[in-house]
Image 1 (cartoon, rainbow, N blue to C red):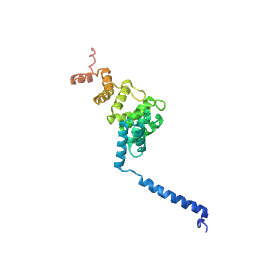
Image 2: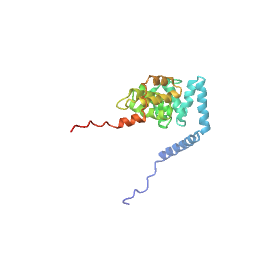
Image 3: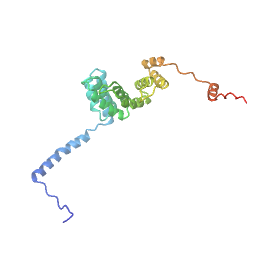
Length: 219
């Protein structure tokens, strides 16, 4: 009938058998995948096992355990990225490290934001990219990450036009925060900054806002 597709033709017998066989094979696999999802305690146990392996110097095992958790634990993903960056327990792969750091940074992990920003500033997997590093540094510094505070302080100390204007006062605040976490390099930079301007008194502020009267003209 016009406007109707009519009954669908039956599949050939061989093709029907192939589809049934594929479904029979796929069903247990899908069920197995669902059953393979790990619980919170299991994830923590594997993360801790990776930590024990790392502390024991068994870097390949630590890397294997943490990389296996990359889709379930953001800290494990960041740890695997650190090992890829350094070449610990696995061949050094800056590009892959950046990819994992990026995913962990997008999940809001300050350590991953600081790590990725550091890689971008140094150009470890490509040309240096201050524009991409800057928002990561700002986010990690706001979360009290000392390395991010220090590196952002350096940028404010020197200025990075057109992205960042020189600002000694902001640099001073960032160095102070990083030094408060025990970072000696930040304390050194803090001492090297020009002295902060002395605060003006209320009288000086008032005098500065009152313009002198022009001399009276003679009649």
